[in-house]
Image 1: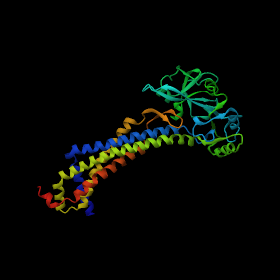
Image 2: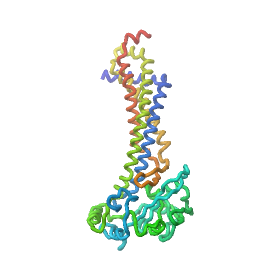
Image 3: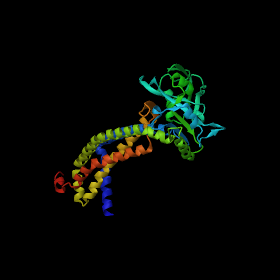
Image 4: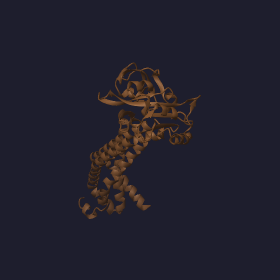
Length: 395
């Protein structure tokens, strides 16, 4: 208890004298805050992208593609194959009609509103059952397009990110001019980056014949997936792969999120080196300016461990302030910021919002405390080993 009392007393004395070293302390806080801002901001890109991709999926839906395909862009299904797929057990039915949508996926070039540069925007051909399959999707402005026409509906995120996608706008692509008649939402998922049209009309515009690239089906329940998959993969008339929609979009997001996180940690690590040196200089300055005070405390009987802990505590306190400031700045500046980036699996744009999550804020705080610990360790050891006689001669 005596050791604890000594440690608390010296630590409290250290913290009370921080305002006397406000300049150097501020440098350490700002340096650490900068590292946390960069780390949290970059990682929030990965969080937002992953949320947009995974938000598109449901365990009660399955996507069917050609065997060996890793995305819709590399897949292909014939019209007769899609008819066979619709006969599989486990699919939800509206009367005798399967709640399933055979879909075609093409890329069109549109300028970004922010920069004017061309971007690859997905144009998806769907069947009439598509809104039953994606039961969370809804038209929020205008109306649903009429099948058999050159009308389209546009995701809200796509309308916000790309030029020429407002209600009433016209898009020239393929052999047709498409007319925007509605906007839809899909719970903020990747689908909101897409433009939807009639699959049959899209086949004709791009001379695709009676072909599709994937089929999205709504299952009777999440548990029906196993039987549905087994029936399709065992059917000699088909050569397909079957995935839960959640698994498909999770795999689609893996490459980019891994890349972003690697870059984020690399940049933050390099910046952290500079911040640690700043913390070291700050704490060495604190020890130097308080050398006589520390020696006096040691002469009065305070132990070396109490001095070491007090200096480390000061360093951690400054680091925590930097971490909190950096986290708040990252949240205020980046959370909810709308942008778009390339999905390397389909080479199309995905619109999403940065997400500064509680886990990222906690990671930023822990990162800052780690910098404070490393930056304060050597000065703390020096303070605890400060020769009493030498320091007292300065009185």
